[in-house]
Amino acid sequence: MAACSPRQAWAAVSTAEGLAGWWCDSARIEARAGGRVVLAFVEDDPEAPAEARGMLHTCRPTSHLEIAFDRAGTGPLRGHRYAFQLARDGEETRITATLTLPEPTEGEDGEAARATADKDLARSLRALQSLLDGDAGA
Image 1 (cartoon, rainbow, N blue to C red):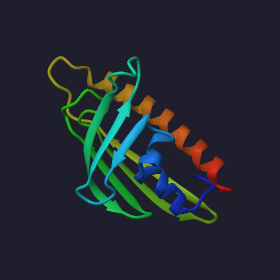
Image 2 (cartoon, rainbow, N blue to C red):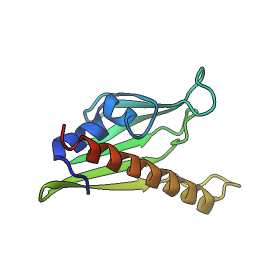
Image 3 (cartoon, rainbow, N blue to C red):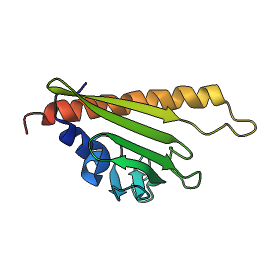
Image 4 (cartoon, one colour):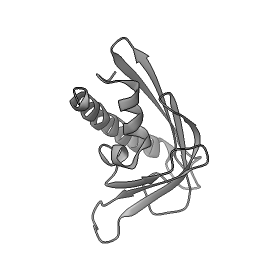
């Protein structure tokens, strides 16, 4: 739960500024169904950031956003699919995030990949919570 309106939560998950505030170092996004999204992660090399490229499969303002990341690219989100559901709950907004991982390739440890992805998602959602709770009075 975030101490903010659905509009504030929506801006955090559907705008370049919002995404860069909690998930990545910079972003480009076309907030419409079929729109493209590119998230950049500086990680160890600011001159060559890793990029995750994907498409918005669902984009219902203030309620549902679903991003499917391409399997190509250098980013940590290759093949991942994220769905964000937003709903008003009294004076707060409930955000539910669902992560779907691609099938592991031969020789890949699916359980380890899931554990890493879950840990990264939890860290990102804590950052989102902090951002939204801090912006609630804005």
